[in-house]
Image 1 (cartoon, rainbow over the protein chains, first blue to last red):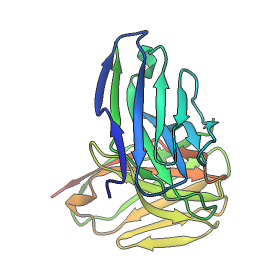
Image 2: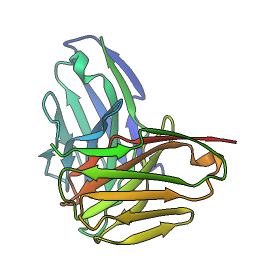
Image 3: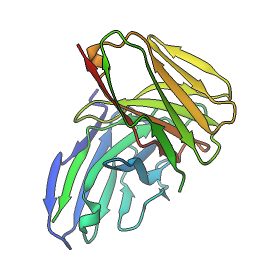
Image 4: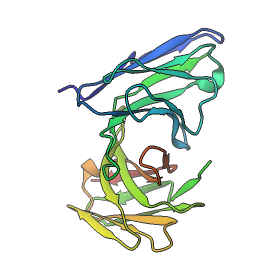
Length: 114
Length: 110
């Protein structure tokens, strides 16, 4: 099992360009998440999908859109990148059980917007 | 949003020493979690705490859920070089919205 995979690993964008970050999991998890990690700020939730067909905003959703393509895949789109979106982006997944809180994280995508 | 503050921000310790770190929140959580992140990787769950006052161990790691439900503590005993990394606390009330702390960076000197 690969767990949670993310592509690309690194990306440099110019201000105003768009791109989609891809995430896939092979653990048959229902719930998937997108976080951003900035120095000194920990991880902040951008969007999550509790189950296939649903998406909800997290703490910092502005400037992003998401698509839960199927049970395995959850993508994050930046329509018009801004320097403030320079960050490391992590995707995570977990089972959708009230008593199960273990999230499995991917290796991250390092995005720089110039 | 919710703010979780961790202290200390960084620690430099000798191999074999014990480590203590804590996390405080402006809000109550009904579940606290502790993660470790190594360079270039995503966080990995170490311990989950579900009840105020609960003390839970995982090998050399022990974590406590504060009785006010606004704080949590992590201790590592007899540190070893592979303990190096950033330790994050996280809190949740819904099981979907997770709030992470600012992290404690641990360096172990052999």
